[in-house]
Image (cartoon, rainbow over the protein chains, first blue to last red):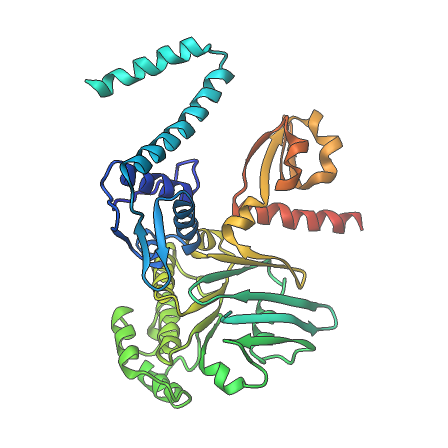
Length: 126
Length: 287
């Protein structure tokens, strides 16, 4: 599990933690059944308070990424290929909705925005 | 169960009243107690511990009434008040020898572990310790009688940034196993940003807010706009600063709608405190 916080990010700490863990679960670096460290240990290691870690864990649980068991801690939730796909789509949709709103705000047409997405796609493909 | 519960704590002085102070703290968390000088932080702590006589209210430690079980409750509490400055010429060994007699649960092994961890030498005299070392020694004493609740009055004031950061690391490791909690008062907002889970904000002897840091911050927004927008909206501003080209101010999150045409940003703790206290000075000028 890798967590790197940025003080200069406009995102609140709990959101940074949530995003980074999501990414690691979705790309397979963290697998079903892997245990997450206790929240207070994470807080101490990262030199932050407990609440943002707790909030990130709660949101991960609500979104179906992790499961918690009283007295045993938190684990990456079991995931069927189907569920993994669904979560990936939900995450991507979220990002794209923000990007779409931004493009619309700039006065771009859908076709123009599609073109930009295609351009942006290319370097990753190579 | 709450580790600490303070209910309607009241203390009347001729010119100041601590007015029905209530808040509570679960095990495993750090609570920052903030407010300006004279807001009642130290009075609250003293009244909680029966160091000044209260005029009303109750305090529960681990579910037990503090005032009815004072001795038992005190053995579960570690209290460090301001600067630790008793008997400057005594060695730490002497002070420890005296202190441990008061606590049936004294854990010598834990004490020695904390001394090593904080790099304290028992042969040193109190006057030879730096401010940071004194706080650490006081913490070592508190933790060695197995205190569940640490009540610290401005433990970080007088420390340089490096020692402060070091002490906050100690705080986080104290609560790591989830059984202990820390209540500490401070003026230093960055201490809160770095390690407080909950905030209790006292102003003029009354509790203004007692909640987790995220909820507290999310209750406010910073707004900025031009002066044209200012006049009609002034009543909704908690506080504001005007300048030649416009204004910046603090609003409650529920009033966000009225400021839609302004620039809105998340509020940081320092701004919340500064604008909230400004509200007060504004009222006094009107009076």
